[in-house]
Structure formats: C-alpha cells, structure tokens
Amino acid sequence: MEGHFLTDRGQVRSHNEDSGGIYSNNRGQYLAIIADGMGGHQAGDVASEMATTLLEEKWRKNEGLESPEEVEQWLKQALEETNTSIYQHSLERKECQGMGTTVVAAVCTEDFITVAHIGDSRCYLYNEYSFKQITEDHSLVNALVQSGQISKDDAMYHPRKNVVLKALGTGDFVEPDIQTINWENGDILLLCSDGLTDKVQDDELAGFIKSTNEIEEVGKKLIDLANERGGEDNVSLIIIQLETSVGEGEPSC
Image (cartoon, rainbow, N blue to C red; front, side, top):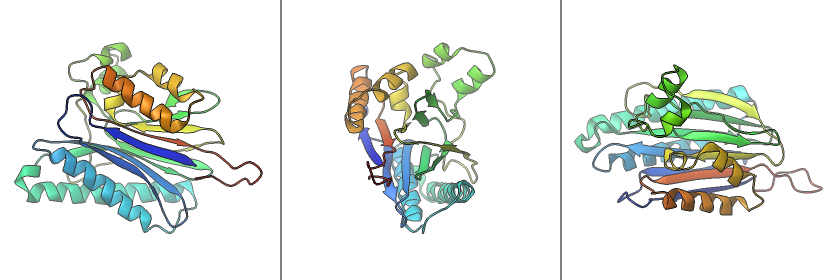
C-alpha cells in the first residue's frame, strides 16, 4: 500500500484545527485518520489532536486483526473510549467546554477496508467501476437532502452547510457509522475534511483521482484548488492506493 496525508491551514484561518495521519500496527496493517476540530479559543485543535493521538496509540498497541468483524469491533470500542476521553477533558477545562471533532478513520488490510465516521469528514473509494462516496454526512444539510427538502446542489450553498449533527467528544456517548468493503489492486481510497469537499465537487474529485499522476501530487493539486477557490477552511486529506509488487504478490508500502 502507498498512502499520503496532507493538511493545509487554508487562506483565511489563523491556525489549523485539522489533524490526522496514517499509522501502522504490529502486523503492518494501516489506520488512516482525518479529524476536523470545532470549538472556540482553539479548543478544536485540542479535540482533533486528541482524537488522532489516542486512536494512534491504541492502534500501535494492536497485534493485528484478522476479520472485518474484529476490525469493526475494534473501531467501535476505540472511538467510544476516545469520545469519553475528549468529553472528560472538555468538562475539566473551561477553555475546552463544548469542543469536539469530526472523524473519519479507515483500517486498510490487503483484502478489505473498514471505515468508521462521525460528522461530515468523508471517505470515497475509486475502483474500475466508479468513484463513490461511501460515508453519509452527519450534517443538517444532508438530513435535509435525505428528507427531500433541498437538492444536493442546494446543499452546496446552504447557509448552514457546516452544521454537524454528530461529533466526537461533545457528549458522554456517540455511535459511529461503521462499514466494511472489499478492495482490489489499484483501488484508491480518499479521506478528507469538509475544507476540501466544500470547494471541490465529487465529479472534480473523481477527475483528479482517476488521473495518472502520483497520488501525493494529486493530493497537492486538490489542496491547491481548494485554496484557489477561497480556502476559507483548513483542508486535509489522505490518499491510499492498494498496490502489489509485480511478481511478488505482496503489498508495497
């Protein structure tokens, strides 16, 4: 597997409230995380950094997971424990009250991907058949779209498009959405914060992902495009491609 994490403060924000990374456990399996913090007085930085750090620590101690069921259970427990830690931290520190973070996390093995998310940070999968968003935003505008009150085009420009209905660390319990999908050699996974998807539409994302450029270069071009279109928010993304070495059948990292 080849993967790259990129993040940018954007053109307007004074600091970056996004966090993330790609981490390996003792079996060489990968956990990719994007967290987009929220909260005043830079508390969003604290929430997103805590989410990434705590999940990384738990993952690096992991001895390896064999089945989708094991991965799904690990993600559920890890996110619930991380939620509790962030929420307790916010209660104990006045400057952190009300903080929280979105999170999208993907465990990548040679055979399957398990994705968990809370909030409106997204995961997409590109394969030979399509480029598809595989997470459903926990947001006000997505709820309005699903209920038929507004169209997807309307959602792009809705004045409350950044209102999330679920976040990590804002309460004593949160339930992530978790799903497992298969992937094959050459498939590409994209995880990103809404700083990207607010500025670059799905068909444009697909065009970049399908290009013949190296995936790190694709990521840089996407961030540049978001910034060219205003860059009002922090922009973060992870691109991971499943590749097997010719003649060996083993993943290349």
